[in-house]
Length: 177
Image (cartoon, rainbow, N blue to C red; front, side, top):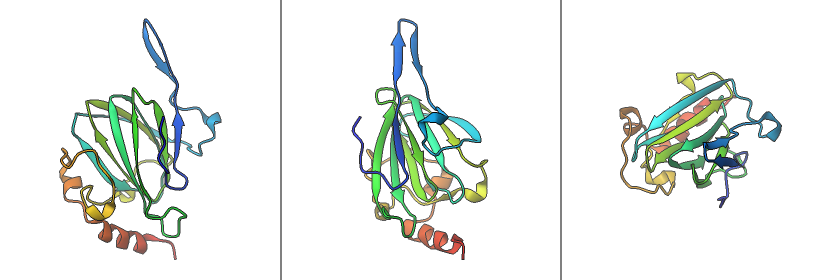
């Protein structure tokens, strides 16, 4: 598995698929792996080919995610002011052929482009809260994420999301004083 340089605190955990004539078994999460992820809620999302979800960022929770069925490119950008990797972007490939789990810390923006029909399973360290779901437009060139496609099927919310500079200003106002 090729690993790009990731934002500080972002971790890629390789997963091992055990296949036999019946199918495949893969452990998705073990607390003993010490990834710092302490899930309180798990979610499963099905996406069709060509769908892009995001770009979102959270102030209060971390994400732990994997793509056991299909294939996704996960775009990342560190938006944390003062982080050693502030402004760093990366794209991580996850899917059946490249099994892995990704820990995304709060303050790291992320979006998912699905190359084929896919299931992504993710956990969060705090219960989902709409107030903790900030966004910017996935296609904003200032975001700097090298998406695998210039077009995508997106939700109205993600299509109409603010540009990166507006999100950065919103994050600056949200920082504790």
